[in-house]
Length: 188
Figure 1 (cartoon, helix red, strand yellow):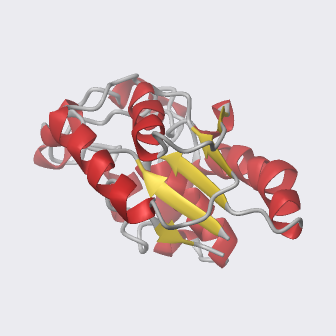
Figure 2 (cartoon, one colour; figure 1 turned 180 degrees about the vertical axis):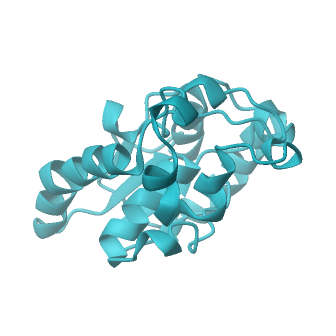
């Protein structure tokens, strides 16, 4: 079985700031969310957990699996999408015509609509899907074929890219899974 969970709440989530790969820790509510989900996850068999190395995901995974003998493997390919110079931007939807908003409103047009200047060094959807797709092919699918039960702890956009690839969803449905914070989702 394959499970996926987004990290718990951070102060930047509360302030509606784009985190991307900026390394922000969980706040107290995020830690409480992870503890609550730990109780829900307690009866689910897991062989291994793969996790983003960013602090908010690491902390979430450690809280979720506290007291269980389940290895946590950190992988750079599970980091959140890089938003370049837009990382740290607060309330982007309050800024008329802010170029990064297309990512949330029309993800299928993100790579085509934003040239390098408008993206300000941010990662493209193609780049995100390449790294998470490589991770799925090289790490996850072979383990699932062996019958392992796997948990991935990650981030909103990164998790969405995995959901889209596993479920064969088009980019227009990138956000369709919802990806709530600290709530497990079964993918396979």
